[in-house]
Image (cartoon, rainbow, N blue to C red; front, side, top):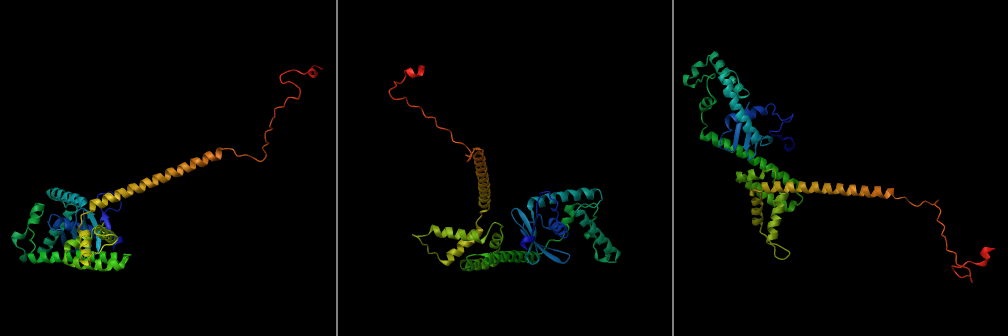
Length: 323
């Protein structure tokens, strides 16, 4: 599903809206888990389960099978969360439904009203009723029951399962596309096993800039440092450790720097190529302006200096000239 993943940011674009049902997923997350300290969550909407993973710069949303649906930059979520809190407090003061969280509150009021009308008011305790028109958001949240240890553990297990499943799919895809399968197969098989045991490794494997090719280059570079002469003998377990070290390595800043340098290099190459093209064009224009010799052109006659006649002293007049 990688090609269908949608990325939402603060940029103002025509297609930068969540749409249904993703807007409902984001709303529920902002209301129930945004300020929690955990990084992994599981929520249920209309009998469907969704997994959420908070990363350093983006928050990723998955379906129940661990397939990535979309991600949102944390800057955008923070702005929307603050905006929604402000809207809710303002709208509640005016006794009007707020957007978008006000609609959720309005739905709760409607549900409470229908419960009373249907004759189930005997199951509602007086202390559980909150006057929604005057309650603050803090009062509403405070009245929600805290999750039990069993519920927290179950949610953590479900989130871990989603994380591991995503890491498994990525590594299997890397192995499928690897050119050096004889080397890649045992190393990636080891990483798959370790991801099942270590949530942290699974999370690191899912980083967008981490790839098997870069992992192979890292292993090769470590082996090159230990070579003696023209060869290096390295144990399998050491190679596996190097592979795991690569995914744990915090090299995001280095990768971004390399990417910028590569873009700068390509831009310079393009400029140099354009300059050479312009120079060749100028040389061609100058060459075309130089006239070429035509076959009809008559050669200039060569004027030879006439030699003085014999017995005539040069520089003196002859008597015959006077006749």
